[in-house]
Length: 181
Ligand code: ADP
Image 1 (tube, rainbow, N blue to C red):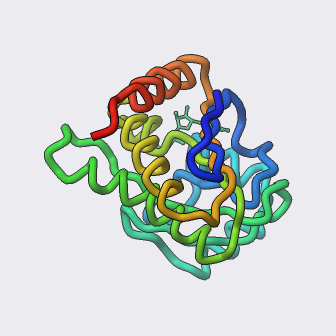
Image 2 (cartoon, protein in one colour; image 1 turned 180 degrees about the vertical axis):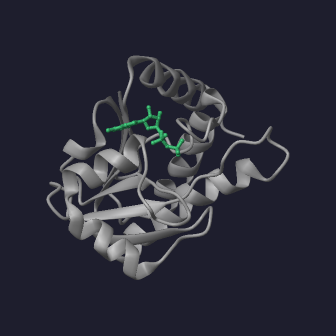
């Protein structure tokens, strides 16, 4: 599913983030940038050890922030590593942290002059964020950003399962059907 926002395309696909040819792919990392399961493991496995070597030099990344490395053997030239919140019931600032993880990744892409970016569904795996709310925050943050910044031409959400794709597509349909306020 694709929609246009100003000059940019917001796209949802079911697929594997490690195969994307966007300028950068976003990694759902941890605060130590230590690698792990899920997206993080897949990006390091496909991208090769140079990404981890750069991560070690950077040292870490607080929750809600983002850092950038080269893309190693990935098709993407860069990896933006961001850290989403571990969901602990919703009363610990998780929504703001999740929004910030997306926003800081977008800002970093803009600062580097990148034109296209692929996101996974941050915090929806091991970090256990409720899926519909995570999708809504992800979509709203990206839609607001590309509505206000003309530099990014493509933001693609790469959803690993059919279920996650359907959740994102459902939330996106709800958001675009809302009348203008
Ligand atoms: P977090 O620790 O932020 O929850 P995970 O990597 O555990 O991150 O999961 C985030 C989401 O990414 C989950 O929805 C998971 O199904 C999905 N995922 C796992 N591997 C891939 C992949 N190769 N490409 C895209 N999405 C993936």
